[in-house]
Structures are given as structure tokens and as C-alpha cells.
Amino acid sequence: MLNVKRVVLRSRPGKNGHPVPENFSVEEIIKSTELKEGQVLVRTVFLSVDPYMRCRMNDDTGADYLLPWRLEECVDGGGVGVVEASKNQALSVGTTVTSFNWPWQTYDVMDGSLLQKVDPEMVDGHLSYVLGAVGMPGLTALLGVREKGHVIPGRQQTMVISGAAGACGSIAGQIGRLDGCERVVGICGSDQKCQALVTELGFTAGINYKKGDVCSALREHCPTGIDIYFDNVGGPISDAVISQMNPGGHVILCGQISQYNKDVPYPPPLSEDTQEALRCKNITRERFVVLNYMEKHEEGLMQLSRWVKTGQIKVLETVVNGLENMGEAFCSMMTGGNMGKQVVKISD
Ligand code: NDP
View 1 (tube, rainbow, N blue to C red):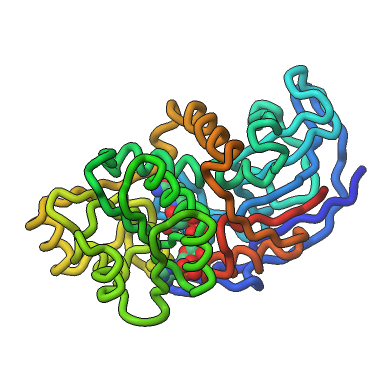
View 2: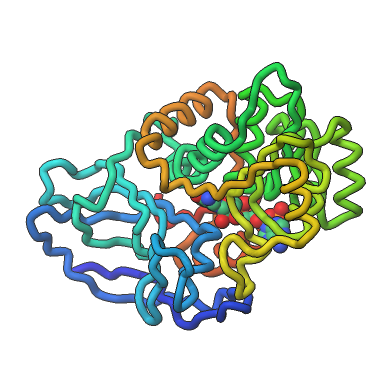
């Protein structure tokens, strides 16, 4: 028997509401550690909080590949941890494992077939990177740029990234630069974030959308127009970017976080002017979903790992400690409290 802490969903914010930490609560349970054949006891090391979780807080997620979290039940998402006891031949004690459906719990008994092995070498020992730069957000950046961006080295293209200081955006801009864009301009929510984009990540410029006029800042930093737009946020920021895109440009429709607390379908409807701009300038804007490229994930993770280990990609992270802070960390990430990937450290 083991004393285990877990996070349960207490209430839903409603489709038109903002999530608050009180939507979650922590409880202690006593869990049997007896293992059946194939099972392992895992200790959670890091848990991830991600924007897609907002739709899991609704009764109906609006996405067929995502189930809603259930009230009064343990919440789950991306996690990484270590096997502490095993009745699974493939997973010995001490193995590092990850899952997209890791319970927000300090320990759990899990079926080994639901876990993927992690080689800590891939992340130079930084296990949290499994949830960020060398994990789902890194793959989203890489495959989004490669599948939908149409970067052509030597063409002197300008790429703009919204949500640029976040988990996906901070990596997407660096990949744009590595793949050969001439200018990489990030839009984000503070001067401190803008500064990190330029001085730490090698972006050409950062634009703080909370200060000043985004349109005129874009004109200043993208003098030859915008060829590629990695869109994480949607709404008025995206309207401003698309209005300055060049004919034949490409929007990578990654996410629309500015609309996630509204009762609208995904992707949310565009304004007439923006639809017209896309049509007249023959700009592509196809929906991108990282899970649709499973066959490219393994190779993509190897590429991300190489870039991170050689320092060609710099990793930004915001780490909060303790399972009791999961709800707080999620809400903070949703409102820009993070720089780089937001993770929560559960144990050493
Ligand atoms: P981030 O680390 O970027 O965190 C979210 C960020 O969004 C915050 O830091 C905040 O930064 C910004 N933000 C919040 N509200 C607004 C707003 N109203 N307007 C502008 N910016 C806002 O999260 P991720 O990198 O994990 O996710 C980024 C996007 O990518 C999301 O839209 C997500 O849904 C999407 N995504 C899509 C995937 C796919 O397969 N298509 C897979 C993974 C993620 P700031 O300070 O700049 O406001």
C-alpha cells in the first residue's frame, strides 16, 4: 500500500469561461501496489500542462481524438517518470517511461503496454524536455514548419510566429531560422519574452502585442512582407499578420489559443477581411495536427534531440514544483505566465 496524491477535476469552467485553479483539487488516496502480469509501478517525475487541455475541461471536447476529463476523476496528460517495480519483461526497474495519458498523480500502477520507453541520453538527462523540445511541442514545431511552411533556403523569406515565446513557438522560430528563413519575427506578450527571443533564441525581432500597434510593428520588422506565418493564437493578432502576407504565402494553422475560452468551433471562423485576404493572395491555411504524422515522430525526435544536444536549438522552460500546483500552472500557462514550455516537477 502506498500513500498517493492525485489531482481531480472538481468543476468545469464552461465553454465561455476562464479556467481557474479551483476547477482542480488535490486529494490523497491509499493505493495498492500489487502488480498484475504486464503492469509496472511508476513514480511521476514531470507532468505537462498544455493548451489542448482546455477543451478537455468541457463536457464535449469538440475533437474526436480527445476525451473530456470526467468530474471527480483523476486528470491526465503528458507525463514522464521512472519504473519503481515491474511485472513487465520489457520495462525493468529504473527505466524512464512516458505517456500522453499520464495521470496527475504522484505514483500509479500502469499497464506497461501504455508506456513508451525513453532514452535519457536523447535529452541529455533533462527529463522535462521529453514533454517539450524533444517531445510533442517540439514535433509540432518541426512537422508544422516542414509539412505546411514551405521554407525555401535562399528565397529570403520572412516567417512570423505568434505565441512565439511558448513551447511550440520558441522552437518553431528557431527551426525557421535553421531551415533558411532570412527573417524570423516573434509576437508574444511581454518585453522580457521579446528580449529572450532575440538574445537567446536568435529571432530577428520580437513584438509585444500587449504594447503598441502590432500592424505598425510588423511593417517595421517585416519590410518585405510576410511569407510564412506559424499561427498559435488566432484572433486579431492573426488578422494583423495575414493582412501583411505576400501572395502565395503559407499559414501554418497550429493553434488558436486566444479563442479557447469561447464557445466557438475549431478552427474558429475568420473575419470577412481575413478570408478575403487569404483568397485574393492565394495564401494556404491548412489545419495542422501533429498526431496525424505519427510515422514521422521517431525521426523527428532524433532530429530535435541532435539540435538540442549541439546547442543549435536553445530550450526555454518554466518549471513549477509540486503536484498541488498543477491547476495553478495550467491556468498560468493559459494566460502567458510561462516562458518556453510549462512543466511541473513532481519528484526528483
Ligand atoms: P505555450 O507554451 O505557447 O503557452 C500558451 C501561450 O499562449 C501563453 O504563454 C501566452 O503567451 C499565449 N496566449 C494566451 N492567451 C493568448 C491570447 N489571447 N492572445 C495571444 N497569445 C495568448 O503553449 P504551446 O506551445 O503548448 O501551444 C501553442 C499553440 O499550439 C496552442 O494554440 C496549442 O493549442 C497549439 N498546439 C497545436 C498542436 C497541433 O498538433 N496542431 C500541438 C500542440 C499545441 P503570451 O505571453 O505571448 O500571451
